[in-house]
Length: 321
Image 1 (cartoon, helix red, strand yellow):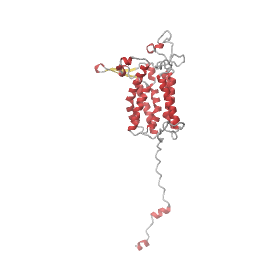
Image 2 (cartoon, rainbow, N blue to C red):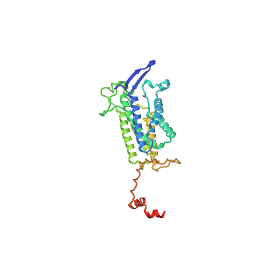
Image 3 (cartoon, rainbow, N blue to C red):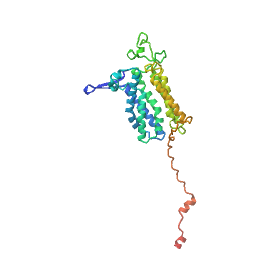
Image 4 (cartoon, helix red, strand yellow):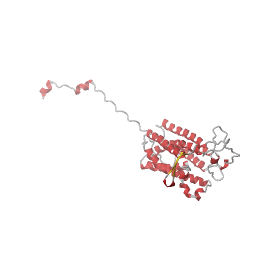
């Protein structure tokens, strides 16, 4: 499948190219925001504001994702960005490819924090609603990796292995005599992560809805940190393309993912009173606003009260006047 949907020549020799990667990334952002709106509204918040938050977080998120990708590549020994710094912002060579989820997450979270403060929003409510749907958004965008023939794992004989053409082979699998194109199949790592993300998001949203009246603020966010972190650590085991820390088998992404999971455990333990984080004070729990009960219908007046209100004027009363 061609990664390019269409390409148009513009004035001045520029070319406008629409790629499946960009379309699916944007689709993931829109789907995630839509689910977040529903969750925030269900919790009694102003769900419609999440679309404004998307505008706030989208551009910083893309910038952060690009910078993290560049930093990760440099740490892995790629000197092309140092030798040609302008290539850092040269998105037109490959759509918006060359992005890293962690950078988008970091910069997007900072933007979301300032948006919540600016609009006097409950930050924990926002985090608990938005965190699970980032998994959905990421999962929706993952098929783009299949189209681009990237983010695959080592060779496998499993029936769901995928074929990778010679042009998109990693250097360690470029020897076609050892890894023939016709018979060699590779782990679809992007698909593993997509499945994990959908399952983790369903679990978190299901728990949030089932225990809406008892759950504490930050619990879903903490659970997301754990599941997203553990899932990415597992996925990194199938990512031979990721830069490793020195001579170890641990990638930088795996390290960050493990720290995410540890942070999530700390958040959960503190929410359930198992540990105390010094003098840190958690905010009061947000509560779903119940629908207003209908006003009770007025009781019909008793026969005695009706007689009092409609007492007839007697002739004797007139004589007294």
